[in-house]
Image (cartoon, rainbow, N blue to C red; front, side):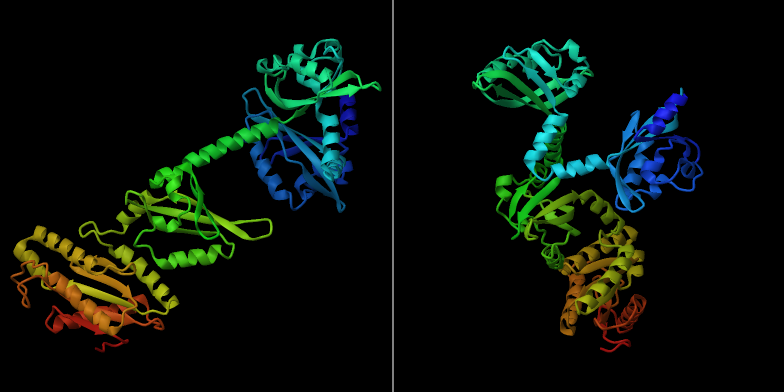
Length: 548
């Protein structure tokens, strides 16, 4: 054990043990911790300092995120991304590997950590990036599988990387033919001898092949044959080099699979800087009912729902043309005319010079969510908005009209002598009358910023905006006439043989400081006055007090 501890303390790798308790206590750390951190092991063991105190501030969030993943992995090992340690204002790059130790029950008991100073390797890597040729030369000769053959394909020399893949000793490989090595996938073997024959005649070859390592795992390689000539220009050796491209291949395959998944499942469209669609996912094409051919070259207003507020799209364009992401909700229309709601996120596409070259839109179908939301804000009997939605909408519209410098008009409408109607015709007839009245009011108001609510009982509310006094009088008249034209018999109505309504109106200018409650009270007072003046009429309150 002493020899082992001596070895660990002399090693360039810091070894430590964390024991599972409430805070994962540091149980042991090698003395060579001083080399990387500039502090003694005892300082760490006494909990005077912690490892994360030395992690570079820019790397700390990523490190802490990765640390939370260690206890969640089912593997026996967790490898951190290389990160920086700050030692007396000196930057040290480290590699960090954690071995996960479990007890007989499979429960976590310890973590064994290995931290190695890789600053030199990092600096070398940065230097290699200076030129692609230098990078290729050093990389290919340092980390690739390299086999030296004679003209007859017999192996003369093989490097450690190759031996590791084969899990063999060099003495067991020398003298064998390249095609006999166990690392070849069956589909690759048949061409080996032919390729060597071509290389022996002076031809350089390069292609992709697949190795099978001793663990039966596939390794993708970029494999090359390079003839080596003597002074008489005769091929005397063949250098075979396998550059490991497994990560690239797996990434490519993963990316292809990801793109396929996205294309088939995510609603995406891409437009140029003028808004013309240049590409879209198959999922979006299928969802909207339009083929790609029908949509490419068109603008997104092909989907526009007639009830959409133009303000939304003005704000949308103002945002994305400034290079910012826009997020919002809006209605669209499919090819078959059916309506759908989307949650839309539009990201500007920026070129290397910072210019906007287009926009990518990602949609989330929230139609079902909107339908559920609609149920929550809809009066069950009349199928118009309920009192709950009125309270929310009133506040929103007040703020919007202040911003747009427009007036807002609030109306309270009450069915005349409705109690007597119920007493005479019964509650079933009363419910039917309420529904017909609600639909008549809704049909009369057709603008996107016109709202009709059932406030309770036989009382309804209307919010509209941007209408002058003359227009309000005409609107109130149209609303009353729309109910009269229903010709719903009402024998107990003292002002008409049919069902009628009385209306109280409050006009609120954009500069008004009235609260929602005060506006409601003034409209209610106007309604009360309309009833006192004989019903089937409208009273308009212009200021804080009723003036007509």
